[in-house]
Image 1 (spheres, rainbow, N blue to C red):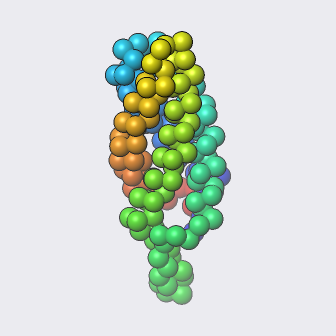
Image 2: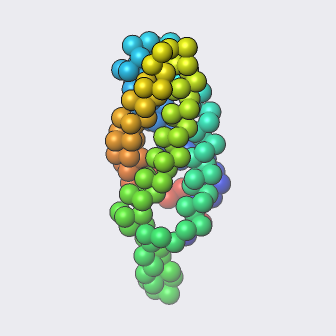
Length: 147
């Protein structure tokens, strides 16, 4: 079973809503500026939808963390929890690099731009892995867009 392009795009869009809200919250928490928080989230909205789509397409080609079962002569593939965890970690690496550079760029006029970017990115590692895992588990229940 594989995901179609529309499903990958829809997953990217729904994840981006969750992820952007988290980034805006964390950016506000560490900068105290709603303007900088919204700017960081706004830039990220565009870069990460594209990056997430690519990530989904790559993972669609990998068999890691799947289990095949034959039921009435039909091969059914189930995704294991370990796949969701490793997939979440791999996404976080790419996503964190993107967040760091965006946060640095938005705060580059500040004397603490690097420190602020590290704080936002470092906190995201924890919040986003958990939120991504939940997102994956919800989408596993949605059959739309699967071949």
